[in-house]
Every structure is written in C-alpha cells, then in structure tokens.
Image (tube, rainbow, N blue to C red):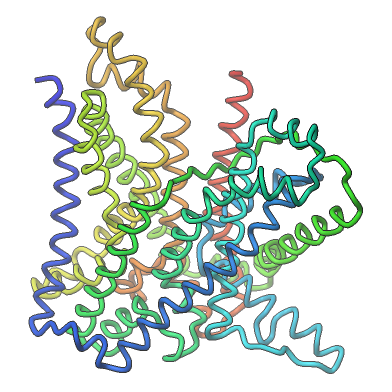
Length: 532
C-alpha cells in the first residue's frame, strides 16, 4: 500500500505528460488527413529542407568535435590563471540564450561588426557574410565547441594517476602517450558527444531563424514555423511536424542504443598531469589551441556586456513593453523551473521504488516517457497545440500556460539527469532506516530528502530556469505584441534594426540566464568546501 502511495503522483504526472503530448500529436494527425509521405521526397522544397537539415547538422558536428579534441587536450595539459573561470563559461554555453549569442556574434562578425570595421581601416572588406550556412555553422560551433571541449576534458581527467606515472616510467613520447593512453578515453566519449551535438544542431530553431538568411538555408523546424505563422498552411505545417518528429525519434533511438551518457559539471577540479620532455614545440601548440578558443568564445560575450551599456539603456528600461516581456519571462522561467523540478522529483520517486525492487525495465520506461521532448521538439508540440486550441476557439485563453508547460518539458530531461543518481543513492542509504523509524511522506522529504538533495534540487531548478528564460521556440508561435518574452522582444528589436536597444535586452538576458547558473554553482561549491 505504501509503495502505491509513493508511486501514484509520479504515475499521474507521467500520464499528464502523455496526455499533453498525445493531444498535440492528435491535432497534427487531424490536420494531415491526406498524409502522403512520398510527397516529402517528390517535392523539391521538402527534399531540400530535409537534406539541408542533415547537411548543416553534420558540418556543425564535424567542426565542433574535430576542433574540441586538440583544445581539450591542450587545456588538460596546461595550468594557467583563469582556467577555472574559462571552463565555467564553457559549461554555461549550454544555457546561454541563443539570441544573446547571435547578437554577440553579429557584433564581431556581422556586416557592420567589429571585424568589418577593422578591415575597413585597411581598405579591405569582410570576405564572408554571417547570414546563411556560414553563419549557422559559426553559431553552432560557438555553442557546441565549448560543450564538447568540456566533455572531452572530463574524459581525460578520469585517467587514473598511476597510468600517468607508468607512461612516464616507460619513457613514452607525447604522441605515444596520446595514442595509447589519452585517445581511448576521448574515443569513449566521441560517439556520445557527436550524437548529442548532431541532435542539438538538427533541431536548432532560433539560430536558423535569426541568421538563416533565406529559403536556401531553411531547416525543417523553421519550415514548420513559416508554414503556420506566415503562410497559414496548416496541413503542410502538420506534415512537416510529423516528419521532424519521425526523424528525431530515429536519431534519439540511435543515440540511446549506441552511446554512453555523461554528466556535464560546471565545477573544475585540477588533475596532476605528468609532463616529461616537454618540448617548446608542444608548448607552442597548446598555447595556440588555448588562444584560439579564447579568441573565439570570449569576444562575443564581452561585446554583449560592452554594447549593452549604451545611451538606450534608460529608454529601454522605461519602456512598457520591455517590462511586460520581462514579467512574462520571469513568470514562465520560474513556473517552468518549478514544474520541471516537480515532474522530475515525483517521476523519480516512482522509478526509484521500481529500481529498489529490481524492476529496472519499468523504471527505464517511465523515465524515457518523461524525456519524450527529445523525440518531439518543443516547436512540434507547440504546433500541435496551436492547431488543437484553434479548433476549440480557446487559443486566446491559454498561451501562457502552454508556453510554461512546453518549456518545463524541454527542461525536464536535464532535471532528471541532475536528480536521478542522487535520489537513488539516497534511497539505498535511508530506506530501511525510514521504514524502521516510521518516517514517511512530508516528514521524510523534510528530514531526509531535502537535507541530502538540496544541492542537486537547486541546481536542477537553476538549470531549468536558465533554459526557459532564453527559449524562443515555444513563444514563437503564440507570441504577439501583447504577449511577449525577453527573447521574442529581442528578436523583434533585431528584426527592426534597433541594435542599441537590442544590446540592452541581450545584456539583461545574459545576466539573468548565465548569472543565476554560475551564482548557484558558486554558492553550493563554497558550501561543499565548508562541509568537507
């Protein structure tokens, strides 16, 4: 009876997720009554956007992963002032609002950016345009290169110290040490990192919308948005949404079956690396790699900080629409953060009971159901709900609720990843003690769960908050002048070339999203040190 009480909330919430997503899918199917899959290959436009989606994702993944290998290796071997801060910035690119990064990249590589102004002084012009495929690749590498570097670095840091000593004892050169000791650890993460980045780039929406540059550089997600928002072609939107969902399901299945997951941590622990016969050539190569990544990642972020402090600051801060967008963003981010946390906590309560009883397949299934957003991207669910609510004429009443739930579902896989392992360990330690003392329900949460899980719970909330406050995909379909968020408000300012006002909004978004993420890590890292 006790097990049922613990599991019921998780089962009900999993049912709510199923009902919510199923409603969106039913709406998509209802608008695709003449579903003809062969049209996806016979129509040149559909064929082009499918091919381009795979092509840009492949190139983005290749560039990010290939460049991350030497950079992570150089960071692994060298210690320097500011390295810990640099790696924190690398980890925070995961939660950096897409449009903030786009704004920073435009400030450096745009037609009137810093680089173009510098070249003008030497009577030269910028040799490329940031709009189109080049811009998409640049933005995707900006997001994913630090992410891949951080994961490869964690793999290298897992090499046991005795193996370094043995390599030194055998007199291995740097190349032999890399080949026989370090490369196997990187290779173990390679498929997982590449698969994850490919999935992120394949479903990229805001990046392509901001700097895609036209029909030649359109992905499936952007085509869904254009079909519904601009052409009002509901059938094409529904067909493309189903096509996108099918491809994502195949990719997610492939990644789940063939790749080993890894947890990204923002904290950095220095590891002793034994370097012998450290030649000048090796030092120069490492210095080049580290300088290259710093020169690529830091300037756009600095430009957001510098450009945001301009003469439009007070004008933007006194704008009614800015504060409306700010209020909506805070409501959405806080609500989505709490909702993602609640869903993750109760679903994991349910799954860990099954795991403690050896029913791992049941536990895996309910956790996979909770990560359904990986198969059905937020824009696809939003599209289905947009069509469904339009049928029932309730569209005007529920956009805020829908955006909150879609953002919570998008953050749920990350919350699950943060809480799953600590909650299971907690149950393994205290289940028998709680049963013998009769500590259940709210008392158990206060006395046992909260005290042991406080850090991962707050980390999961801060991550969900940061992801939700910078999201553009869920609000894109439902937003308008009266219902806007900071990312949408920023996009509208950039679209109308009000770049100084956009810089102010980008700065505030950056401080809100990355600030809370780093601040949480900092506070709880200090507490961990004090407790130790």
